[in-house]
Amino acid sequence: MDRRQAMNARLMENAELAPYTWLRVGGPADRLYLPNTEEELSEILRELSPVEKLTVLGVGSNVIIRDDGIEGTVIRLGPGFGKISVDGAKVSAGAAALDAKVAKEAAKAGLSGLSFYAGIPGTIGGAMRMNAGAYGGETRDHFVSGRAINRKGEIVTLSADDFGFRYRWADVPADLVLIEATFEVPKGDAEEEQAKIKEIMEKREATQPIREKTGGSTFKNPDPDLSGGRSAWQSVDAVGGRGRSVGDAQMSELHANFMINKGNATAADLETLGESIRTDVQKELGYELEWEIKRIGRLA
Image 1 (tube, helix red, strand yellow):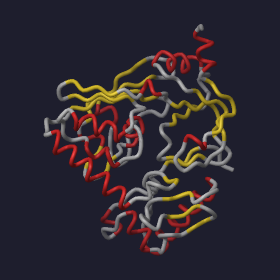
Image 2 (cartoon, helix red, strand yellow; image 1 turned 180 degrees about the horizontal axis):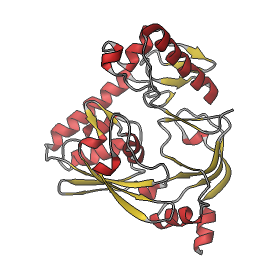
Image 3 (cartoon, helix red, strand yellow; image 1 turned 45 degrees about the horizontal axis):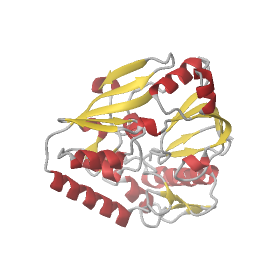
């Protein structure tokens, strides 16, 4: 099979994207590529027109894909990008590696500092892209460098400074496809780290609707100086948002900052619900809640 045939084998036209998201909503992609190696990904990116719109989709845990789908090309990295390796104090993880698996592998090796990833429902690619964090830790805390492939198909290495991390944000150009992260973390005790992970996972099970069709946190925590110290979920609660529904979209009764799809919600239902919360917070509490979950795709 030549490179062109290999590329076509990884291509789906007019591909439904809802099955690739945790909320199970969204229209089709014009084109969906599922590369499994760096070589395949480089070839795909080289072949794309410079004006072609490009979207990278991870495990789909932190995204609402709009009902009219996504224009252009969507890339979802295959399992070949999910490898994790430990070398001394350094942990390297492919962009498709699950955050929770990275936490477990680091703990097993007796390394500290990445246990917080056990509480994040996503992949390392998404974690790099948004400086994902939970339970007192953030991606930037021990981040050393990231590897990516640009639209010319070239592999580039980016330092932590290049990422410009801040709260739930990284200044990485959208057209760079992140493929690997490297962390340098302190030595710890394997049993203690594994106990931390167990505690985080039990807490998540008890406080988040992880058995539902859901995603990550809906809204970012607001600036406490503006919100009077209220977190995002407390802000939702303060305007009566817990349990609020639009169609089959609902703000979870268990955790007010999580959306759930109770059955056949549309992306429009979810977005309308979120905007109703944001409107009420601005009107009643006087500050803005910013979306944390990504909303992508064609506007109706």
